[in-house]
Length: 295
Figure (cartoon, rainbow, N blue to C red):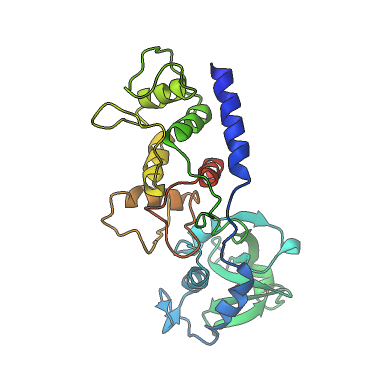
């Protein structure tokens, strides 16, 4: 049975991987967005056009193209993937040690060995990463956010939504959960169902529950908000660092803590338009993406 489940999951993941919509925010506009703020004064702790500090400026520019980043420089340094200085691309975050105590300053690479940043002396301005008088010796690394950001986009018309049974199957396989119980825990899941063992396993692990009528509803779909809670509980994901906000997630919303945790661990980056998509039905490609991002 376990081998059969693995084969089914493999086919699901293959099916999921090719259907993702490409309606993502374009990183090509990031230089234009950043240059809108040229001349804005520097203000320590500032987060508005009356004055930015370095990380708030970067956060604002990425927000303008629909990508959420944490507020502080240290948390931004934990995002994306590391890239070498020789392979920098437009939109990469470049980091500097200006205090002698580690990462303390961030800017956005705009090509031609230049970056735009909120400098304490000049406000939002352009400098060279090879500046021999200061920035060249302070440079400590770069992270690429753009190529993976804003990829949980609105589903295309051809996108297929994931059912509860399919989610149970993927999670059972990922977590190596099995069940030896031959009596179903749910009225609507028979022992001859392809999802039977997986549903039994995730139920016994406390990841999924049924409805008040004793049904699992394997053909029903999950919302993205519902999946956030499922993933945090299934993988015991603890609260991380940084604070994220999505336009459609209020602080009092029931799934806000789960969505926040996923964002803190870079498992979710939102829909590319500043929202999380709390009521959107989870698509198969999005499910696959979330699972791949969980370490």
